[in-house]
Image (cartoon, rainbow, N blue to C red):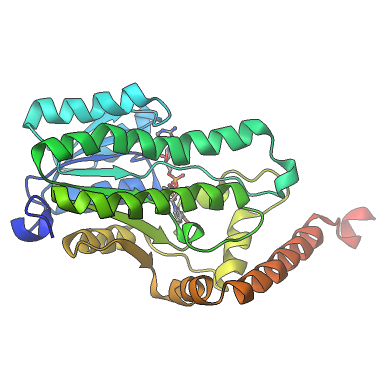
Length: 289
Ligand SMILES: NC(=O)c1ccc[n+]([C@@H]2O[C@H](COP(=O)([O-])OP(=O)(O)OC[C@H]3O[C@@H](n4cnc5c(N)ncnc54)[C@H](O)[C@@H]3O)[C@@H](O)[C@H]2O)c1
């Protein structure tokens, strides 16, 4: 573990952190966990009001800013502001993300470009802004929010899977060269987490919660505050990848060691999803009379 990161310093107290997508869900939970651990957090989001709401619920150390991660200059300005105030940036959380759930033939180029811009370019902008500063100062930690979808593949969220595989690849490759600079890189790869994203990006008749419930065979989703605590623990341990919760392990291992079997299971999964979506869309007998 690097000297500038949490473990040798004994904790997160006084650490300077930027979180993107902090107005909701996992980003807001990361801000709460960091603030509770004593870090100074800049909560950023494209939704300025939501970012402000997150910061207002924290200690007076927390601040907020409107940052659209698709705007490289805005991400750079957020990093620069922290460095100008405190002389360093200890932790950068590239967390903002969107999703589309649909049969892929229904995605327009606008959909593809939006997910590339937010989920891939957004992380690239965070890395491009924070990493050179961390190299200059000789320490730091980057946390990129990927997903189990960055380690395994599921149809009907194909564009999302593409974007999260890119985030995992970027994180692991960068980690190998960042180590020499005393910089850690962590890709967090949670299964479905109880956040508003489960109800977003639904292009066709797909019910997001039902889609993810069928994927994990349970209607209980991972708690974002638990994920945030697990993430801080993974930073302390200088882990490369956080797969969580534990019930996600079998899917991860299967994708890794039995890709052919995983692919056959994925084909059956999409067929089951489509059948359930057709049933849900069909007007009931009672409704047609
Ligand atoms: N919830 C899950 O099941 C789950 C699982 C794995 C990974 N993730 C990932 O976690 C991250 C956070 O998602 P969440 O579940 O908290 O969703 P969420 O929708 O609750 O929060 C996402 C936040 O990102 C912000 N955002 C969207 N576009 C932005 C942009 N261009 N610039 C800045 N902010 C922007 C939104 O305003 C929102 O506040 C995403 O990267 C998502 O892909 C979520």
